[in-house]
Image (cartoon, rainbow, N blue to C red; front, top):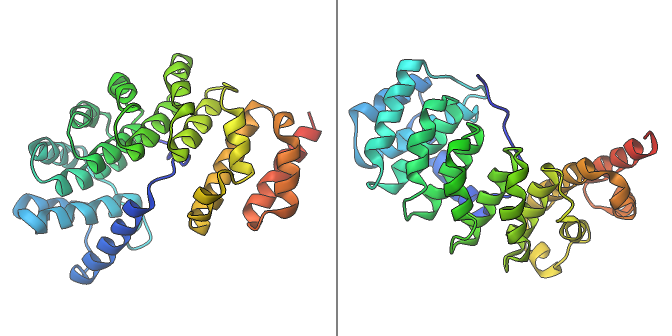
Length: 277
């Protein structure tokens, strides 16, 4: 069954940048058209750098970022991919990371147990990619590990963990997510507030308002344009679940003054929805 892609997480920009650079480099090496199954076959036949490059290309193919369209794997192919992932655990972290992405995009729930095991690995990027994959797969079985990771030493891991927990729709998760509203890293607090709103909790209202007010300013000034835009759009969607009347003044200001047309439009739509209730 196809899973809905969730978008509230603010993925660390360093990870996105590395992925873009790698994708461009790999496309230069692999100019001929290849299907998802072709990339899987490449992984089965190769090792080392060529294997993780094929894994990276496969993850992009499954996301539809290559040739402009998504591709799919058969059930047998997913079994092969899962075997490769399990064999990679504790080995080359680059391979494990991209296989985790591919498993999430493949959409087969059989991958949950292996991805759950990956949440015990030391590599931070592997943790992040495995968390996101579990979010795609609605991997409720890994909730205990995810709760544990909300206290991880890495702020990037903490922010993704609270975000993914917020996608599961379980009120019991409000308490552990609320505990991160006092996190020293703003991005963790933001994702916690958004996750809580998605769960119907207003515990993060003040943190959501800080997003709309671009506070703290030094952190916001470091965000690249689309990062800031996506953050505000996601916060507006989350806030709307709580009742836009809690954010009337913030939405009004965004609809009139925000630099992003998309943000202005989303804020205006939220205000319109409020007026029709």
